[in-house]
Length: 447
Ligand SMILES: [Zn+2]
Image (cartoon, rainbow, N blue to C red; front, side, top):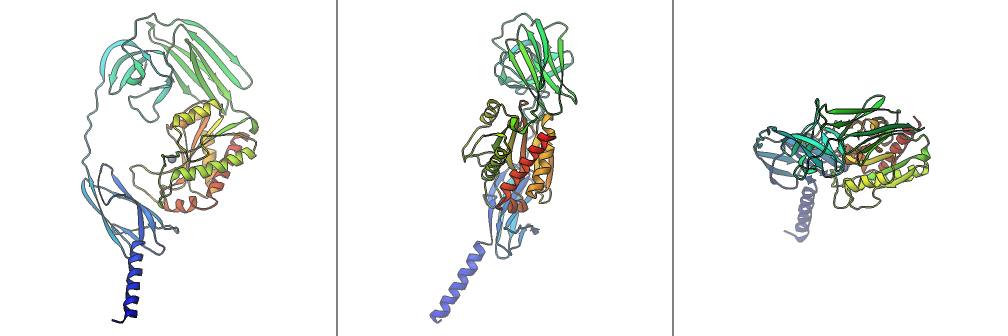
């Protein structure tokens, strides 16, 4: 064969090989063979333009930037998934373990005894489960509680004849509690200011409390379960439409303060919280992009806009560094924040991925006080950023839990959604999202 023809053939072969190599690139799954406990396997990656992707013979949607994502339901035992493009076929194998059957634990009953809370901010919960929206209040260190049962990691707390709660065992000391007299009521007073209502109530020792937010008032209850009639002291504090509240306890003296939100823009302090950072990358996108970077771009744009509006701005991070959730909250409390906006992009857990449903902007809140702001932001961000409105939901995220400020967590788009990936990789996405958040905050303040 003449050298020229041989060279041309080799060249053709190289082109063919390289087109096979770059037909598509998978970000997930990472391994060709794996043992899993999940119900779904997510396939996510980037395809060449003009490439069709089939997963188990299903034609998968590929966005204009090549992004695609698809989840496969796994059955117990071996699962074979075939991913195919015009030139390239690969086989992935998942071995799904049988689910471990967990036997529900029984409540272990015992005689009522005192225990002392050994940490501040100890969650008192309505059920013996360590997640979700079951927090009733956060108890202070050195509060005396009565316990009369246990389940798993929790003690059952006796509050009154018709109220029980649960506290994690690690938050209380049951051994070194010497018997003492029941708490005695000392006094109580209330003050009304232009922008705040304050109630003080004093006892001879620290007692447990609960909070309940109603339409027009906040109800604080203090329990004295050691008294034979298990007295409950109820404080009804009226609340304005836009409010925050906080509780302090010092030597048996509770202060409950309900603040009206400021009226003027320049009286607001807003904490901008770019989610994740440093070693904590957050969700990964179809093209391998990292959520922490998108969050930061939005946060920096928002910082500029809010400053222009005359708002006092505090950033939890301005570069790619790690900061704990606790420190983010601490920073906000020290800054006397009125609003805390946490910026994220969404992902999905072990659920089926749907290109039409797992898409767009959603906003999360925890305290009822923050619901109004969350609703405004969901609308204003999706309008400004051109995303699908994906709803307003409650969630127990640490950064939005404190009642001292209005806390919202904006999931601007879905990292794993191919169409959203086109949006958040566009030059104007961070700016537009920031405009949406800033406009929403302004609308909320002027409402
Ligand atoms: Zn996130």
